[in-house]
Length: 477
Image (cartoon, rainbow, N blue to C red; front, side, top):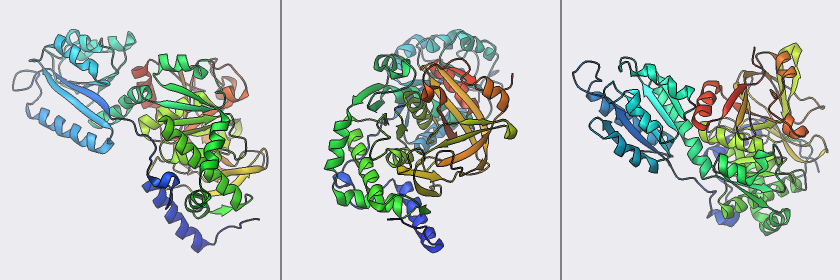
């Protein structure tokens, strides 16, 4: 049975319905487990804030009323982010820095507001930096001369981001980054089948030691049993509401095949609830049914579904989801020197690339290209959109390439979702692919993950917070 493209009137109506679904994170009118269970949420990141220096009318002191403005700004950030909690608020002086060093250890991260010297000098603040928490130090102009010594912490490899800026929006950006180390420590990743990728990324012990996350192995028969337990009516409702109605067209797959893919999503949702997991990756995703639609919806909802058991890409997607609230698109890229571009393509893609709650991109439901079977997506990405291509490898190095979407394509030679990204130097990217830090099979060396947004500065700061080396892959020498 072939389902033909929708009419324009039907498409407009169903696209609006699909957009609303993405925004509300609904799972259908009678979702699996009667909608009573939700995917697990992480607790808020607790950030200890300290004001260092003097207020008042004395020389090189910040105005006293500025403290109240900061405090209101942080309340607003709590409301905006929803998963950040600011604690502390001590002022040095009069607070004793040695006592504060003991107090902050119970927090997830540290935020220092450098007001002025005499309490905000490097030797005093160094005691707080040495606690070892991921730390951001915000220092406005005219806050004294102690800033000259702060870069030493960066040179020493301390986990601190230095923000010498008059723009308070830098604080908004920074608290998002401070979520990442804390969230990873509370993260559980399901490997449905053997994990694949670099040796370190496939080691549960190495992941736990380096990032704090847990890797859980789940056999295929457990997933199959969960699929069988999903009522047919639930799978039909899920398929109809989230996929069939909003699709621009359904080209090859049959309705029963789409329903089976929806059944897999509901099974994986239940598995993630049982294991309190935030991500799942599978080396069984090319089975029957394929994982393309299930992983797509997980990514739409702000979780991570990663194909082909790729642990390096899974961890990359988690980092960006926590920092920037963006879904990642795992891709098999090729280089086009004529267009100074990297061309991305794969059959698994989120439809909410702007993050959970955003409007869904137009999509068609297709087969998976290589096998000409299963159910996959052809997503129409936004031309002109700034993007960041990235991959965390070996748990210690982040390869990053910035650019913009130049064009989309529908070549039968490639996977269903395709677009070309501009790059700084396509020839250099081709010749230096992997920057000599990736070893492994085709998938390990090939895969990258693309995110909507230009995050080059943020990624460098995130590297400082987490002790990760950041390399601009294919950047101009």
